[in-house]
Length: 92
Figure 1: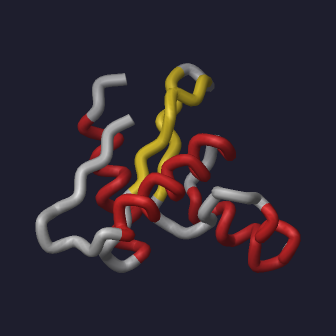
Figure 2: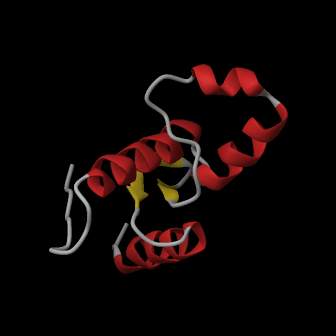
Figure 3: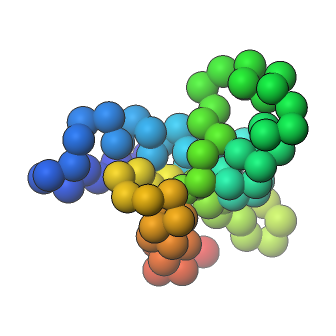
């Protein structure tokens, strides 16, 4: 696991980003998709430490989940865009 927090970022952003990454990895889909599912089913709120908010992307290779990337601190769409850029930069 690796967490990076920029100097001007609030302290809670690292924890939020981690939970977004875990959500994406556990569901093997972007956390935004889990957020969309939750709109229709309030029982999804009982998922424990998962955070179904846009900004988490799973890292998949040959159908196997290697982990996830989560970003927090910007607009939700920006968080996902940065997470996707981070995933694209990885050689997996």
